[in-house]
Length: 399
Image 1 (tube, rainbow, N blue to C red):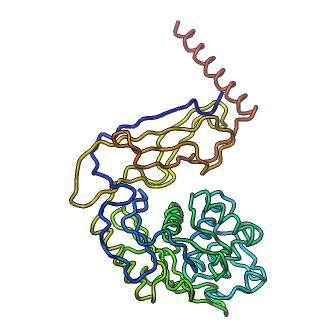
Image 2 (cartoon, helix red, strand yellow):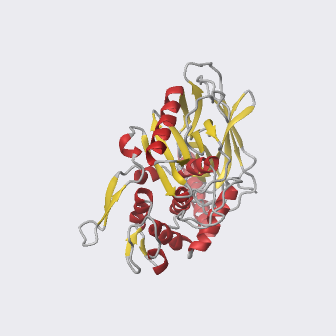
């Protein structure tokens, strides 16, 4: 017997929503990024592209590379392979990294959380390598995983040679690919708890206390910006991937190859303001919201929840409101095997309009689903027998 019996759950949304845009928004005439090599503006939940310029041109990413590094870190935490309270011992190699750094020393111990802060706030190369080694053993193996994740996300114009973004031959990405990586990273909502910090301290109160100041000044000077990552090298010029949130609508703005940090910040601000002035979203499901409850006698707990792994919304242009009925369809995978780990994909939720799929989102289990043991089955049988015996005794007594 399979865990799922080709179960399909249909949910008709009886409320009316507004017309969503297509993958590339039809209104894309604004000249928002004149003085940059490439740019892209993305609505996070639907993946709709609101503006693009040279979005598939391969460019040096500098420290935008750390978007992927942070993504793999957050995935490791989600899989419970890593905890923010874990203590990492810094290697000589990690301590030797140049460029942006927090001056870690070989043999120094620091928590995962403080290392994430060092990466997210100060763009620390030494912290990036320290966590890469903690997760994969070596930075080289970690970089292999970075490139495997690139393929998993079906990105065709990205290749990484290191976890930090230090200049390297054949190390490149695009504005489009970086936006998709950022979209994926923002599934882990805790990341903005770090990227939104403007200033903090490492080794607070110690002799070697280090003041962290966010390289992304927009987290302080733009009311909606709460991340993500800056980058600069002489080849890459000034780069920035920024996330911004307003009224449940989150956008990602990517700028690559600006001539100055002032131009970079001004361009990103203009892109974000354009998005919020012209578009709105309507939330259908929140992250980790249950969409189905399954029953299976082969599992340790006979029922378990299937849930969304990110927020699901519809996007529409302001002032262009056309009412429509939207249908969601939940399709659960067949032939699943046990155990199912928390975060494993077990199905897909489709959002459809007129039988056309507008949004497709993976579904996961709320917690790890283990196989029932012989002892579990025995306990169930005893419980059922006891329940049956009590029921029979009650009937006999009444007679």
